[in-house]
Length: 88
Length: 309
Image (cartoon, rainbow over all chains, first blue to last red; front, side):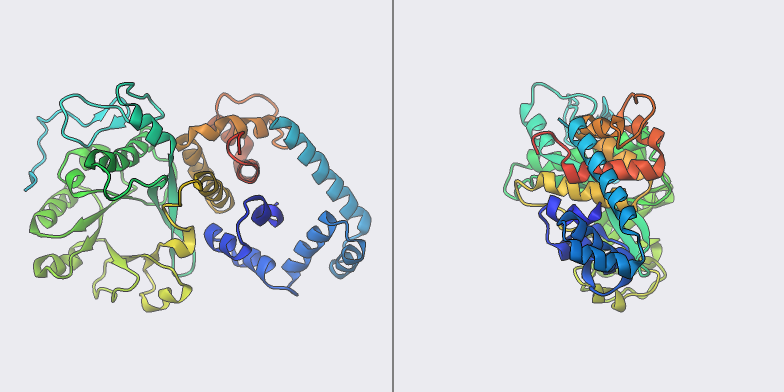
């Protein structure tokens, strides 16, 4: 959910990390490329962008089956749709 | 010079859930939660532009150790009439009154800054609670005598001492907490320094290990510019959802009731997953439990706390 926070709130990432007082792990995931935490975030971004090549690369790196990612992404879409309907 | 004694014969300034710190024969309710005085529409307008929040305080290991109750939103300018400036403090204390009425859940200390006029009123004694730490400025011997008398009566203070006044400066060892500026030299006493105005991570290196820290480095600016109120509210809510207790989240929602409809909508949706309807936003958060309440609050922060956003 946090992967979209800077976009949803239109706040620069560095400012968001500072203002939210995020844990060291979260801050590292946002700000340091190449860490285990940031790989998961990059995978989420690849999902959002339908970037299949990057998605496959990170899935392999994190040892997460592609079908598991697909199911999780579909769950997220259904939840987002339900949320959208609830807030109309 | 303000009266230095507590006069119980004066009419209480806490009225109808609101607090009026002005000298007035006719008490005025200033709370948006418990009623608005129709004769003063400016107050309602001002209230709608403000909201109450909890600024976090951290220790040197970045653990959350306390909060300070603050007003956010449209800032009353320095050249505004004293009545309007006074209203800020009225609103802050009204929010505090509401928290005390609901038993001030949680265990962390809560700092509340008060002015000289409130220090010399009966409000601190009326509102006192074991978690409250009154943040005051001690400029002279009158302030010092008043604060020491209230401390003897069981209140806890975090004073900023006028270092140019020798008697006031000498009192440093009398306090449990001492408000300090990030640019000050640490006081050489056992009191816990509460370092304000922290804007850079390296500030912490100059202070003893038991110091607490507060400032825009952690929480952003307390007074956002006009038009950014909603964003400030969203950021505060997201921060509280991510790192604070369920009690703090409930208090934040209670202090800002305008967000209740959308919070309930999310809580009752498939995403919130509640099995039966809640009677209020606070009730919904309790029913959801800490983890799901945090998720619902984060979703509310990201989607906007009001429909127009």
